[in-house]
Length: 608
Image (cartoon, rainbow, N blue to C red; front, side, top):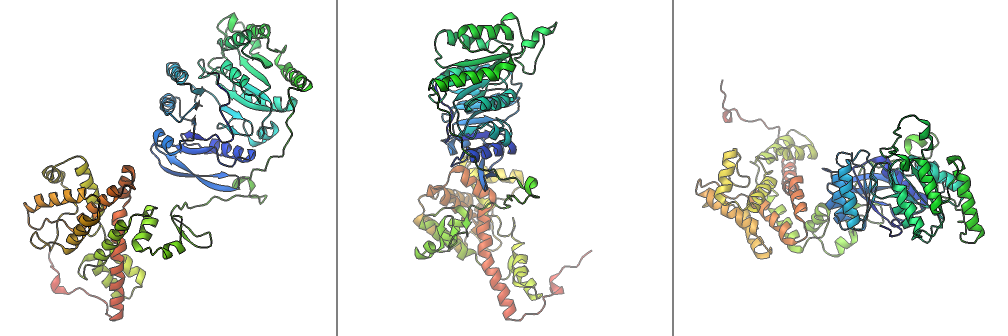
């Protein structure tokens, strides 16, 4: 392992299994240290995607949430630390997945109780690939003034008392996370503080050992002395003894192995950690302390004198000119959270909405980062504005023209369709514009205008699975599902919908590819052989062509295309377009001063 420094002020991490408080403590530490960017680049929460709102000082930030480790690593290639807060049941599998990612260098496993066989596999893989595993059963590690893992070093008060907001000269490694927090404070009282501290974890087989980190500290110029806190059980400390004997460590090492009280018990005692159990004389604290002392480490007579020995060693290095004590700085104050600071008036209130499509805070509004003046000066049309606000990117002109054509062709289809009829009835009842518009919009669904998304979804699935039109249509029939986008109450095979023909003509002229549309036409050919009214309707035409637009433009990933169809973007196009016509019908009825509508008796079948 050896290597050197594994963290820095620019280190970024991926946090697995969302936990608000450990992440917020990391971000508060970042702010305390004066980091320019947050150390948490992304969160991995299996099955979830989106953003999590957290604070970076006074500023509220949105941290991306990814559903898989692979997606997170691809989105944040500079994040090389993986902090795993998974349970002991899944920690090994997720840690191995992280180790296999080329961007990940360090994996910290917080969970206790990870099966030893799984841990051994992780250790072997990490060592073969020159990567670092901290844990399992660890609180993590910290580089003072730069980066910390999760709950390392405890509260902000402890971090400030331990002077961890700026680097010192001491490298510290321990098995215990709790004792690490205590030792950070102890070291800060008698030295200029730690440079880096690691808690390797208390399990029998830690991912990295005490000696691994001591040898690493030896390669870090800023570390002038090393403090080690071991414990009874296991033989990890003896690898450090060998390193000292072989002269691999040329910096002063102050070490203590806790657990000397074990000899007071008549039988073998299991202390807090799984590995803290003496299995013989060599694993006793006394034997380890003696071996370390004989190898050249500075070993106190008891834990009570540990602090004094650390001070003596540090002071000697200062006298010899090997250490220039760090100049003290005043850290910034971390804003208090609302529930704590509400009485004092020092508050930070969370936002309630996340917006990624527009921003009105500057001198002029921006759509997807494009200022309003640019939109006007460049002659953008409605289609361009939709591409910015819906798709968060500027689509090619043929794409925005197609959007505009769809809006024009779908704006209205006469007063007899259900949406227009509802709007007309509502307007004639004296209701306002919004009420009249909404009454018409509420009729949009699977049977009226809302089949575009379903048409796109089913055509895409069938084409991507290479189904023949026969297999697709007959498969839908067996499921009892009508093929969305096929069929019309009026149009026939010999009387095609002019809107469909116009859309197809435009696409064949301008689109790089029309594979989905051609598939829809093949399906129409088959359905027309069954009935003359089973033509490709405007929903099917728009649905299939929008797939061609998304796929052919080269600006959308497969996942983005699936998401667009799933969310309902395409039905949104029909809603937007038809709103124009419904508003027109409202104005028309009010302009004509039409009375309250009552449906005629003769148009109703009264029956028992």
